[in-house]
Length: 86
Image (cartoon, rainbow, N blue to C red):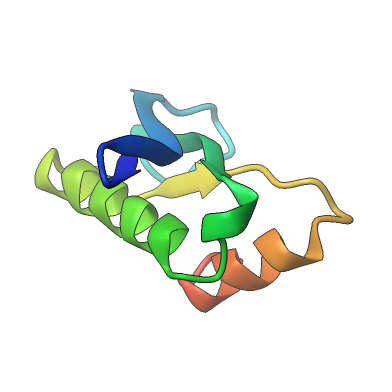
């Protein structure tokens, strides 16, 4: 969770779990519930949360990270691509 002046402005989580047969690794991290309140968007908060979650996963030996996004959520797709997601 991210806060500004003591109030929550964004959130996200990572769940580490066993991978299905179509993943490349035995375990992967799934990122979910990524949300930034509208007035705080465009300030890099979501990117900071994602980078922190990736770092945490990597520290636990997890190298495959996945997430889901609605196909029409162009701003989120652009943001995730900017962070290296395909």
